[in-house]
Length: 330
Image 1 (cartoon, rainbow, N blue to C red):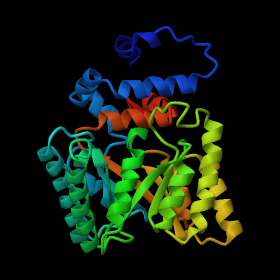
Image 2: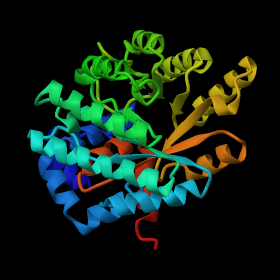
Image 3: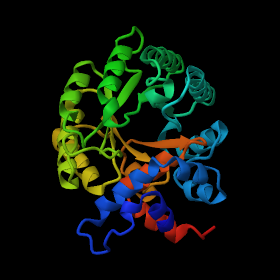
Image 4: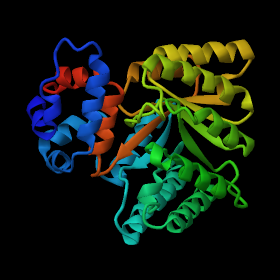
């Protein structure tokens, strides 16, 4: 891995082992690597890459994802299914991506799964034609409503924040869509408090996470302590709002802060849910369920898994140690 990193990004090759902030540096390296097209092609088509990703990605096919969802449901945990991919290059690719989600929604209804879907608007063609992405997303939300399910519009880098929120508000205003779609807000952005105020005024459900993209310091809190403080501040706005939200974190300090605030404010465990990623902190997932909290696990699948996988490593670099310890185990 180090050799690949040095060949792809020479400026990182001589980072001192005595660097004062190794985790932020490692995070920057991993996010930079997530944008490498050559490394992506190699990794996604290699047996080695498939073995590395299998902990966090539930296979390549719809059936494999549905099998994972069924297994997670049996543990008393809800799921959100995500067909990996972003930034399509043609309207036809966008429609093909949407068709996978229509298949998922049909299967959720048929199999009576406790599941919804998570969608990126760039995968629906937003970079090509915003009106195309709006029409495709509207069709998915209509289908979800008919299947008694839900569409979560995922958040991408800060270049897309305003357009994503605008589109979600427009979709939510369509008759029959209220309560059938939500959006993700990233706590590391300075603008997130204002965005939450706008979304709550419309009664839109929010998934609060810390954020997994590399953003400039003029747009996002550069220090983890500041991100954590903002996460707690935003959580304390969401929970008493009367709208059902998801608190997405694997950070035990953030979880404890959420549980404590809910107890102090008399907010029941069924008035919100925690959300976590497939394959990450399964011990903590089981613990929350045993304590009576609602939990939803985000299950990604598909062939375009490399950017997602690298961002998960960047989000929690300790996952690198996990992979190293478990790679040769059966």
